[in-house]
Length: 458
Image 1 (cartoon, rainbow, N blue to C red):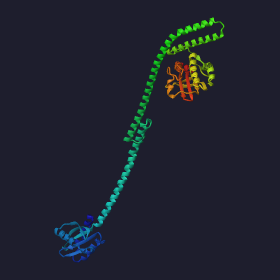
Image 2: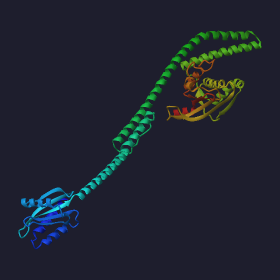
Image 3: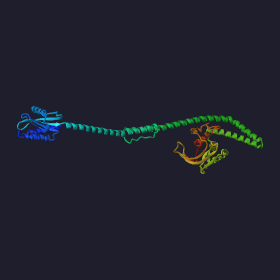
Image 4: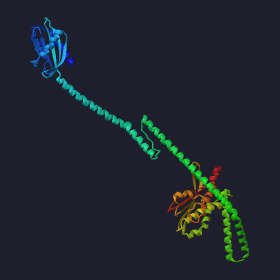
């Protein structure tokens, strides 16, 4: 605004200096009217002090005294004058310059600029600037919020979700932020921590399993040592009386002649003493782990013979037998008496678990499988499955049924399944058990076939 007023005043000064008084006095007024044509923003006052000539815009018909004083002072001091003032309650800015026209007359020109409109424009501009700044601030805040949500809040939410999964034990959960920054590095560190924790947990579980297995083996060894000591004492203490009873029974059988009933009783005594002796010898053999004479065996024949031995008890308890034994079963290497003892114990337990009758399923087949822990070593095994519909076994005691002296029967000794497992392990096999209370049990015996032995030899 000041630049505009100064430029206008400078232009008026140049024009006025080219005018000659009094011939061109009318030109002065026309010049003033041309400058202040709109009559709203610019007003002009021209004053010749010596001639007392005053020329001014029509809007300044009154109250021009202050500007005449400015012109006089500017002429007297021979320098520009400018000031802000209020003229008729209207704020004004004035700029005054002295001049000297060609004939030597000295005067001054003052240009007045109304600042009220300018102040309104400034006020309007202030509001416009305020609104613009407000909109810019709001837009910036929205962008910051959106950027924060995308680049900070969302990744942190993913991290918190990963932490929640980790706290619940889900160590397989991985976080993928899909970018490369500090939060991504934090997510990668979290993923690595989860992997390390999973590996550590698996290692701890394996170590705990190994420790439990060692403890079970230790307890088994302690029990076997007790059984060995007991078996040795029984063999010593019972062996001699049994021999005497067996010998006297044979002597009485020879002396009694043809008394058939007495012969039958003596035969029972002889048979039972032989059985007691055999049980003690088997128990001693199991404890001492003596490997008896082995040969190729047909398991189907052994299973059929075992069923024949238990036929009377099967009929007495109303148990139906379902057999599924393949014709092309490969032979296994082992001791026939020991393996018959294995299947005798398992089938007898199945029958006894069905006091009200039920179904006994007996099957034998060849499968190429691997032992647990040796998944890469697959070989042919003969699988013998003994399944019943009896009372079943509680899940929490399945691991204990092979322990010495552990039994669920009122009259059991707790040695049958222990001896059974020991014999199967001696034959390089294993036993698997599945059972559900009220639905029955399944015992699966796996024995390596001769084909598997031939592959090992090759």
